[in-house]
Length: 395
Ligand SMILES: Cc1cc2nc3c(=O)[nH]c(=O)nc-3n(C[C@H](O)[C@H](O)[C@H](O)COP(=O)(O)OP(=O)(O)OC[C@H]3O[C@@H](n4cnc5c(N)ncnc54)[C@H](O)[C@@H]3O)c2cc1C
Image (cartoon, rainbow, N blue to C red; front, side):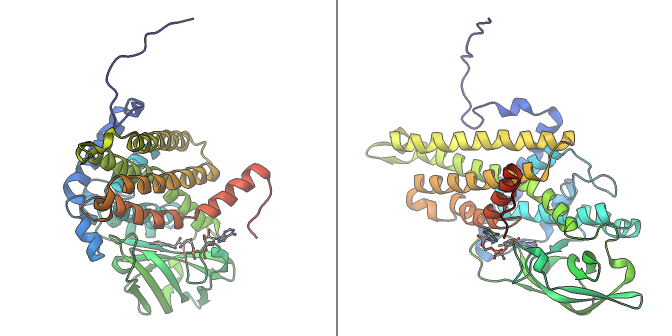
């Protein structure tokens, strides 16, 4: 039996379990690069973007120059990184703002990925290199006003007309819709659901931005209207038929979210930790109250546990052993963890916690969206319930 001494070194409150040691040099370098980008280019401005309800388009080319767009894809100007590296980038971006991470998730996992996985060589060559640099932006149109958790009920329809396709329908809640150059639109056809690559300057296509959001404000969310949009026969994504196409894309994006949520939670925990050390009441820092310490410890444990979960699922993805259910588990648990941490951090900040001077309530509001999109917590519960019981409880 070995009796190794317990290390006497100091605990780092920002990485209590020394998870940093589980990353390799390349992963740490990428993480540090994205962290500095967020510190320099996102954090100084994001409160203003959030207040104004905008996402500046020029951020796209800056993120493209860093290799963050479609970064986990191979070829066509994409960086071809590991899944863990992609996850760590999402984590650092979401520590800035869920809107920034959403931009990257939509561009890489929901717009570039379907072209990369299911598109023709011509579609890949036309779009992917420009999308990797951020010169062309993409969006992903699956949800409709009456078709959310159940995309099989979508009404958008594409019919063939001679050599062409003609699409009619309306998509709702589409991230990047109003700034996109190309929309991946999923529509019913006589053969089942199919994906179409729709340049947004095609006659009959309009995007209307959705105003008055209280969540994910530093992100463009739009309605897409397609009225007799006529496209050439080769605009279809030939490599997939049926809902497995959009679901494969969602899996890619959900993977980014299960890391990203850790970033939002970490930002809230660190903000509460710093604040509790500085803010004095009853003549002492509020960090000296047992009740505050209890909140901080709970947050720290939750963030560390979620990070280990994300890293584990990331390593499974890189090893080729991850299943959609594993990604559901990560998305489900890490997003609810982040919401819990954000709410607790908000209480530590007292009145200051409700302002944009601190990141906490912005993250908290954003996380309401993150918990709804890419499969609500209820839908992921049903996916996992089916996985462990063998019984579908979807309807
Ligand atoms: C800011 C934002 C950005 C988005 N970006 C995109 C995008 O880029 N592209 C895109 O296609 N979509 C996008 N979405 C849409 C998002 O994916 C949907 O909102 C989501 O799928 C849920 O659909 P819904 O809002 O219609 O809710 P509904 O499906 O109507 O669900 C309402 C409630 O009922 C519950 N529910 C539904 N079915 C069941 C069931 N079988 N059992 C138990 N409970 C159930 C849900 O969990 C939820 O709590 C975005 C949404 C937001 C808010």
